[in-house]
Image (cartoon, rainbow, N blue to C red):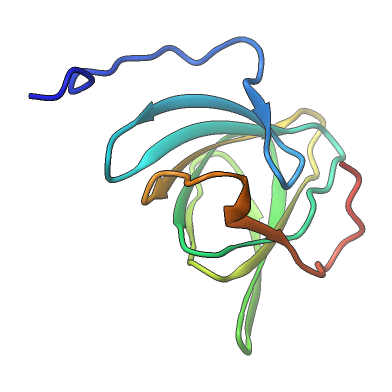
Length: 132
């Protein structure tokens, strides 16, 4: 059994890093198959529009309100974000999100495979003007 088979973490009070999209990231657990983070975007903030080259993500909104724009080929969608909403960001899909509530937008995300590093994300044109 690998030494990290029972990895257990508590979300940190302060962000560990800033994501390429501008959100504040708190690192949670990871395995060889996937990684999990909690990220937040401040009230009224709009992320940079991004595309991940190889990973796919599953998001679960835990706090705040906002919107997510996704585009893959000719398919484009804007999804309302609120606590309890879960969604997928497919590999190579463009996406951008914004926090529209009075408080920060907080999301738990699982990335599969685990996040490979800074070269994974690339800036793309989005639907809103970014503020972070």
